Length: 33
Image (cartoon, rainbow, N blue to C red):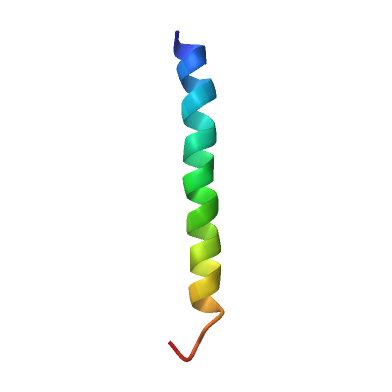
């Protein structure tokens, strides 16, 4: 039960973290904003 939850939750959290990192990189990439 717990392993099944991890298999579905972990990729979801990693996806959010990845998009947050890309967003922060994008913000830092535009110093004029």
